Amino acid sequence: MSINTGKNMNIENTKAQMRKGVLEFCILSALSGIELYPTEIIDRMKEAKLVVVEGTLYPLLTRLKNMGLLTYRWEESTSGPPRKYYRLTELGVQFLAELATSWDELVKAVHSVTKPNPTTQSHE
Image (cartoon, rainbow, N blue to C red):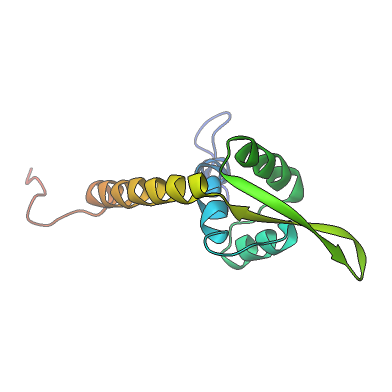
């Protein structure tokens, strides 16, 4: 469904921007307590209806690694080239905890604005 509200604005674009805004948080959360191969990360995102493609994921993983939030190890594969498994660093665990707190606060704030409270609605 696409609702055109202006020259360059439509609902799909807005939804895509919202997804991009939480993608980093979701990827870090997916790696919480476990190691994952990028294809496994993509599969987890798809299961959650957060479609992410390799062209988006790999640069993001590299950026998170360069920030010191992720590390990886290589594992030989019997069915192809070695695989790179990512996991959170200690800094990544701390960063994720802060993001989770911020996310909870943001969800509460958005909910308070988007879900009308019958006792506070103005009567015009």
